[in-house]
Image (tube, rainbow, N blue to C red; front, side, top):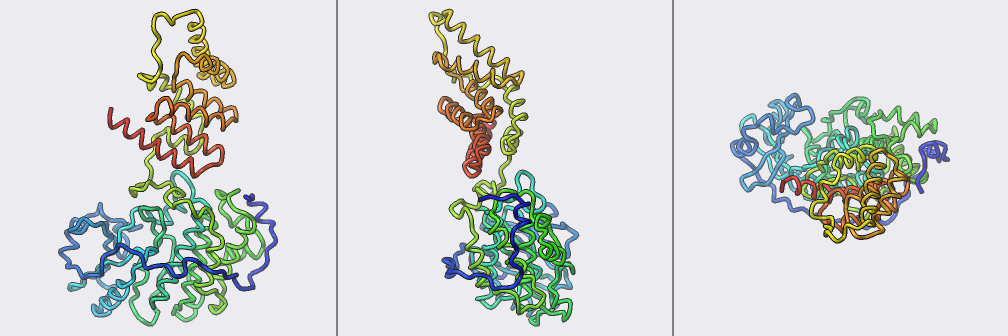
Length: 486
């Protein structure tokens, strides 16, 4: 089903007219699920203590201390982690308006939101307290990724979940969201995207407060200085462009590319082969509808949610697996071997295994009694030595042959031999055989991290990425436990 970008670029473009196809959305009546406590008002002293006196090292804002309104990570007296946003003193001169806005937003509770837990309004101080969401922003994962680009299935999930968040807020009377962008979307401990509640706060009820880069501003705001619920749809369209392109492309430029059918320039090259022509075309069409110049021509949130639901892929795969995030809320920390397996850098894996040698075979290989030192056994051991020499010299076909002779005798059992032959199979474009040997190495030595790493590399090569990520995570855990024990 996958297609290359060039095929996508030459696909039949149906134009920007026509309604978005609606379908029944099973999540339409989504429960307001949340483990967030009820909204409350905090004292300034409580939040000062929670943030260690607003320590610089607790700043989590994208622009650090230079941000006009700084966000800190904190911990309440009950040890609940929170995000504390401290506004500059000119942001909310009217304390009554601030409290009214905070209390209204604080009534919202939904598992698509980073919910507002409380506020503080003392003297000139204005602070908001929200759920702390631990796994970085969409901007980080989309524009500045470290180990792997965000997968197509996850990008579709982000689009759906944020549309659901906006639909929920609209249904609760909070239709305006200010400056919707990739920095407003955060990933929780399960890897699910959540929309920050901070964008629901506005400085006035007449819709005049809207701060964003002019290149991404809804056209009606430039004309009138006001935004409407349809303006939020425009901003959602720019978010879809981010997900499609992996870059922050100005809408005018993106629409020119769409008009010229130059979709190869629009789509993220990292997505090559991950989506069908029809799916790619449909998401671009949805984005272009959101970016219509006239607000009345943009789709509503209900139709957006329904259309995006139809596009979902790998819905049974948890978000943390798609994102490569461990369930304890921390991004996987990989050793050099783990990084090499994630990238299927077989040369790097070979260097590490060659350096390691047989150090991990202690206690795993079968010991030989004096009586077993026969001519046949010496010949078998000689096969192993020849295999090691071939492996070191990167003659992987010869290594496979020699290691196979050693294994077939069956007198000695070595997980390292299976590991070496596994990598030799990978180097010889035989990933299924490589996986079989990696599994056999784990049978011999169940807690050996090398075996799990090689399973991950084999599964990545076979295109079974979800299983590969599980194996990679298991390997990282086993390696950490081994290092801790030693």
